Amino acid sequence: MKLSIIIPARNEEKSIVITVNDIIKSLSSENIDHEILVVNDGSTDGTEEVLKQLVKIYPSLCYVNNTGQHGFGLAIRKGLECFQGDALAIIMADGSDSPSDIIQYYRKLEEGYECVFGSRFIAGSRIHDYPPHKLILNRIANLFIKVLFRLKLNDTTNAFKCYRREVINGIQPILSHHFNLTVELPLKSIIRGYSYAIIPITWTNRTHGLSKFNVKEMGSRYLFIVLFLFLEKLLSKGDYFRKDQKQYESK
Image 1: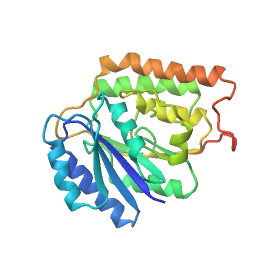
Image 2: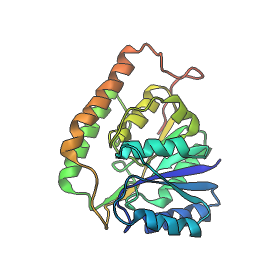
Image 3: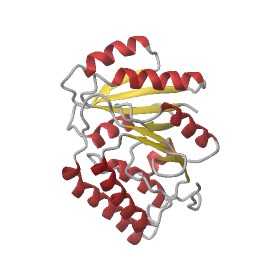
Image 4: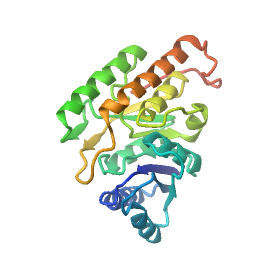
């Protein structure tokens, strides 16, 4: 099973080298067949020049430029059009996600799960230097989603998740242009009946550059995609539910 790592990157010249190095080192140590696909989302710094040098060093690394409209979700969607693996994990370019957790995701896929969702807020998870105001908003937003959809998952908004290729095919069309894609992918996967595991993960705040996430800007977009998917769950009568097996969930 080949694993693709999709990394959206915008102005990450100070972070992308360490992020790529650590991921490749971790996957190679476990002999996991992989590709690293970085999507350069209109960077105005030296990100692309750094990537040009990195692809000369690492045969498993490639990058594409998102030449159309820019946005976090659009960058990931570009990666979803291009990845070659049997499964994929979405990783942040800033080094906030732990490469060792990717290994745990992969092992869960080997057990037969179709999705693996990490949570930063369950037993065994660890977070480092999470900005307090963002943490409060995060917990409120995730609680709202958890209650509305009656989920076990309590960290839906986290981008760092893993999906088999057939899941990505089964949750089309993808609508989100921005960070609300982090909610659209897992919620669609769940309500359309794909199996998933939830595991504790480690999150560490970036040490270089600035976060691209804007709380004020993203609020209405998150609400839009959450309510859109709630209507699908409530009113679609199973039209988009997978046809091959019943829905189930595991932790």
